[in-house]
Image (cartoon, rainbow, N blue to C red):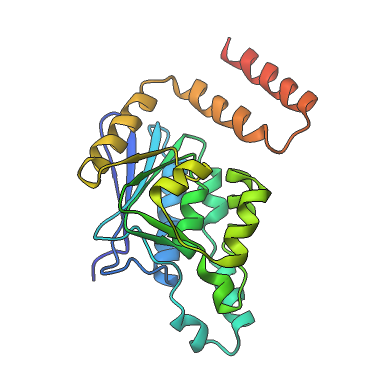
Length: 235
């Protein structure tokens, strides 16, 4: 059986994780286990300088495998099983900059995973959404937290409450994605971006990421102190 997620690392230190679960790249428990292994490997390999997350096929991913909820004793039990095999903290523990390349349907857990990456580049055919509210559930793969951090509460709450799908251009205007490119150019553009990042000294890029990510959580004085402390480590 083909692996749900593969990993390659090139001579420039660019690690590329490829999700491959045709036809919709549904996010099931087997994929979670594969992602845990991949994220651990990327985090622990010292030569990695940038991480790219992509999917094969027509869609980045349509979200969770809802049939797994029916196989458990209750929805809460299904949630518990999934949370015990949660890869999100591992993704967040990767110190190098991360890029998600989005195309086609990018929904639910798949979108929530992309929101934890540092940069999101979308092809013009991308449709994004968190449909969980329509199903009577919270987007509890981090959606309430990650989307709010990316675009702010005033923009995130209406999207989550209405479970409305949006296209790539609206996602760009909201700040959910950094760039929109033509579908044929997505892979090349993403790798070009990763190659530019890989040229930056690893100690510098990882500290830049810590400073900028910390700016949303720390009071200004503490953020400035973090910046100064990390700057001194660079020299």
